[in-house]
Structure formats: C-alpha cells, structure tokens
Length: 180
Image (cartoon, rainbow, N blue to C red; front, side):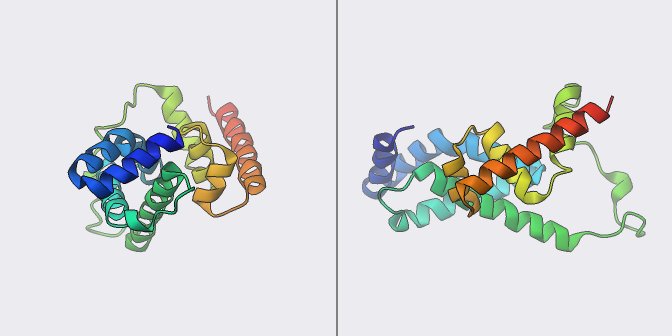
C-alpha cells in the first residue's frame, strides 16, 4: 500500500470514523491478526491482541506522525500487544506436573492444519528461536517487510534486523535438516 492510500485511511478515520475504521480493518485486519498469531500461537490470544491493537490505533490516530508508514506504526503496536500477552503467559506458567494444571485436558488448536507436516515443522523451528529472532524472521518471511520497516517495528537498526534474520534463517535451516 502506498503512502497516498495510507494517508487516505488516516484522513477518513479523522473525518468519518466509522468508514475509516472499516477501511483500516479491511486493509490491515487479516495481516495484523496473522502477524500476532505467529508470535502468540493461540487463536484466542491473537484475536484479543488484534482487537486491542486496532482499538489503540483508532484511539491514537491523532498521534500518528505524518511522513511515517501507517503499516509499520500498526505493526509496532501489534507487536507490543503480542509481547504483552507473551509476558503475561510467561508469568502464568506452571510446571506441567503440578496437580490441577489442566495439561491433560488441553486440546489441539482447531485453527492449525496439522496435516501440513512441513508447515508444522517450520513453526516448530521458528519457535526454537529467541523472541527477537522470531519477530524479525516472521516480519521478513511472512509479511515480506523491508529491513528498514522491521527495524522500525522492532526498535533496532536495519543492519541488526538483517543480521538477525540471516542468523534465524540459518538456525531454521539447521533445525529443518536435522528433523526427519
């Protein structure tokens, strides 16, 4: 999406909030959901974080800097929401052998196609990476963002983003080749 279209969405949100919000969701709803989903894994958590992302975007549109990319601004908010959920989940972790932990009643996520073995293996490989490398890899591989945009979203330099991506890619290739 070019800057002119982004500017149109921002202007429409300010002048006709309902229509502007529909435009925003129509353009970014699904990609932002999948960006978050790849980070938090759970469908329910991804829906919650995506909803919170768009509420924050809508309420903060007046703070959006002209000249910036709307997409990278939204993705940065979405990333922060995903990281907030991951941090909350980390704090809620209980040992698997704790009585009453509910582990035995966990069901597979109905939104994941476990029949695509290569995709499942790729996801397992990605989840072996440190959180920062996961973020950079997902933004580059799935969202096809530039290193400049990734750097802006992740709060790092473009060189660091590129380095992190290539390290992550190497680790994933090694993992994929080691698992039959």
